Length: 148
Image (cartoon, rainbow, N blue to C red; front, side, top):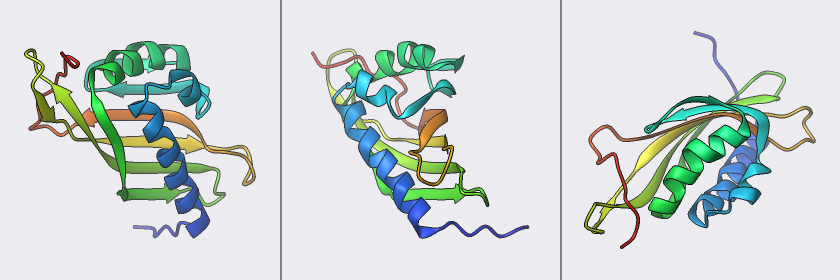
């Protein structure tokens, strides 16, 4: 198997991307979050079939999940980053934490994991999300119904 060395600056910049996005999820800052993504992003998740395009990702993933949870945070200490040799494409895996609510409004821990693919046009350009996959850990409750 080929070895891959990721430049420390790339690991830091990918971590910064997640550290910027996490509070946007927690605050339901949909418009701000859009700035971190390519218009032709693709994604899928626990409750969403594959979608194409930023409008679809926002409508079918973000707006159906973010308002029903609390305390979202990417655990960037778990972040693993793999970057292409030209340093223009990164694949990242990270665990996240959140609080869900059952049908009675009782809270429960709702952790999961994300894989994201980020791309940029040059080393000076910002990373943009071109793919995301969110899923809860398999043994976790799969639905959150929002605060009472």
